[in-house]
Amino acid sequence: MAMRQTPLTCSGHTRPVVDLAFSGITAYGYFLISACKDGKPMLRQGDTGDWIGTFLGHKGAVWGATLNADATKAATAAADFTAKVWDAVSGDEVLTLAHKHIVKTVSFTQDSACLLTGGNDKLLRMYDLNSPEAAPQEMAGHSSAIKKALWCNSDRQILSASEDKTVRLWDRSSMEEVKTLTFDTSVSSMEYVADGEIVVITYGKTIGFYNALSLELIKTVEAPAPINSASLHPDKDFIVAGGEDFKLYKFDYSTKEELESYKGHFGPVHCVRFSPDGELYASGSEDGTLRLWQTAVGKTYGLWKCVLPGETGLFIQSVAFENRLV
Image (cartoon, rainbow, N blue to C red; front, side, top):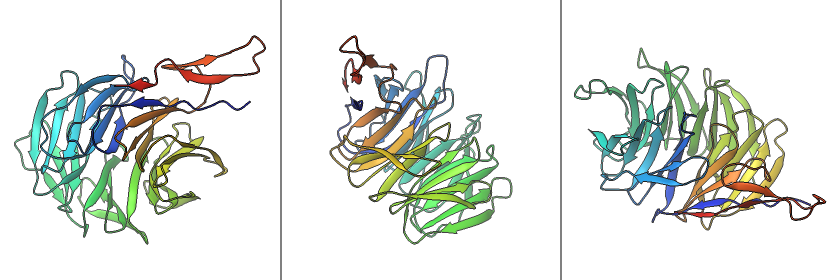
């Protein structure tokens, strides 16, 4: 008998959830941050979805959010023309970085000493967080708004995706563009996987996998519907993706076969990411919720418990102790 996927629904936001990110695994587990058009990014325990706190201070929609590896700092990008850095333990605002237009994306270096931003003014900016009063370094080249910018290659290079239908690779030291990928349609999302130097790019119904150092194509997977976001499992076994048809899709990375699909949201899926241990993936939607999904349905993990109704063990299902979290 097939086991039924029971996602955990994380409520609390009042507008569409447009970005999410996990921390690394810390002594206290791992954590999840969500960006929402309600202007109130939220921090949660990553394996359960339990609400920890809300970062208050933005005066517009928050388009991007990230945590550093040890979950001590958070950064957010917003429509109020600012990026903010936060103490993720106390919730206090540490720094406000003024921009000239809407900010869409933020990314910490591995040592948390530098913050990368990008947005509607088409510029990449690198801020030295140890000298916040210093002017940021800027890189120009995109002809339209930057949707996502990420450090790669041990923070020696930068990947940026823009509404100009390009993904560009930049050298940090020379601040020069190294290579450009051009697509027929706008890129909807980008994920960097440090282990193996892979960048996952979604555009239209296509999920593309590229070498992050050369931007050479590795493979593509075609989905049944337009995809807004995709994520590669840490062990590179699976891909999860979500998009315009409200569904979450799971594919085998090697064979590209569609393994599962679930409809749990009541609006398009804007973002999806695997947890750092690979046990679950999180999705954020137009419906204002985050949902947590098990990678291996039926496994006891977090708030999920494998229940055996009878002693025969023939009927196994995965249920959540509490599947509506605030």
